[in-house]
Picture 1: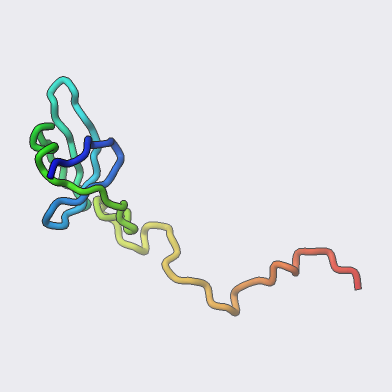
Picture 2: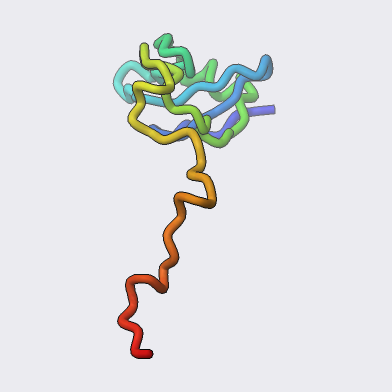
Length: 97
């Protein structure tokens, strides 16, 4: 099964399950440059790409795979605030009683 034409920025999956993103296409050299989730860069001949059978894939939810970063260093909150920390959205409305 032939793979689709690669699109820069799109994610694909190899037959072994490895995820990667297309980061460059060199038309003059007829190559596709890819970056695996772990940050490894590889270059493929366009002919090899077209015969590969790579499937389009969703980007991974954990974007830190290629970065040397701990989850707590990402600046993203990983825990949902508890109910007691929620504010009532109606508290901000002017109330006439």
